[in-house]
Amino acid sequence: MRTQRFAAWMLSVGLMVSGAGVVSSQNYPNKPIRIVTSEPGGGNDIVARLVAEGLTASLGQRVIVDNRGIIAAEIAAKATPDGYTLLIYGSNIWLMQYLRDNLPWDPLRDFAPITVAVDLPNILVVHPSLPVKSVKELVALAKAKPGELNYAAGTIGVSSHLAAELFKALAEVNIVRVPYKGGGPALTGLIGGEVHLMFPNAGSVMPHIKSGRVRALAVSTAQPSALAPGLPTVAASVPGYETGAVICVFAPARTPAAIVDLLNREIVRVLNGAMVKERLFNSGSEVVANSPREFAAFIKSDMARMGKVIRDAGIHE
Figure 1: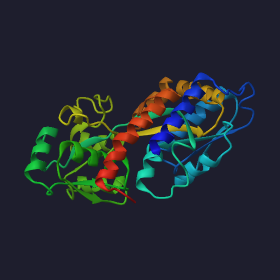
Figure 2 (figure 1 turned 60 degrees about the vertical axis):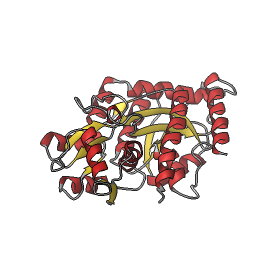
Figure 3 (figure 1 turned 90 degrees about the vertical axis):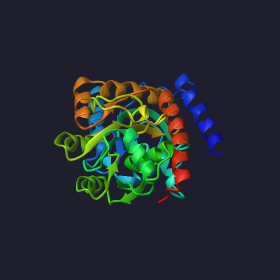
Figure 4 (figure 1 turned 180 degrees about the vertical axis):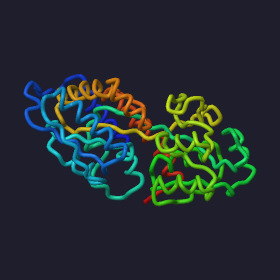
């Protein structure tokens, strides 16, 4: 059933891109636009405020950031599809269907993809006391001591959690999750030697890598990242490994194609601005800024890969 829904959704994305059923956007926008997103201060909020500032300047209408927490997705799903309500959120918007029952939105039915704004790589780090200096050595140690190594993770289903579970699956090792009440406490636990390893995002862990409080082994992206210069990829030792958090821009489903295309062009232009790129890089993220079709294909790939990891590991909130 999910495959059929995804095929129908991809067809609708294709129609939007090709211009089928296009409604004129000549008068858009003629009133303020609202971007709903999660809590203030996090990565979603940073991206939302930079996009809002750029769109306000280019579209001639005020763009307002509305921080609504987890209900942001539900608000956007139920909003009128006219381009005046947008959603900026991470990949858990489509992975949450595997983690929770009875979601009040459907990730394929209720949203129109506009663009992946940024990628936030995870970095595999270990406590300095662990006698490993490479992914290969970590895998060997974990296989020699099954169930004895552990990893820190905050909220169930966040990128640091799923990155570790993907590592377990592909490297075929048994490491044990130690739950914390958030990414900050989890990283503090690693620094304090309570756990052996973690997959935090680059922005949060780079200062601790530079200070020597933790030892970095590799980056989670398929290619080396400028955010972690000199680090190899996990995939160099664990073939097929690729993960990380993304922050994305959506409109409600059935938003007219002309409006989606206009928003994509303007948001991509904002994200590729030199000052915006620098601010995002300094916060630990790299600009992606792709097309609606490329975004839809990414969702399909990520659902297939990470959905399997979640199901196989029995992860559920």
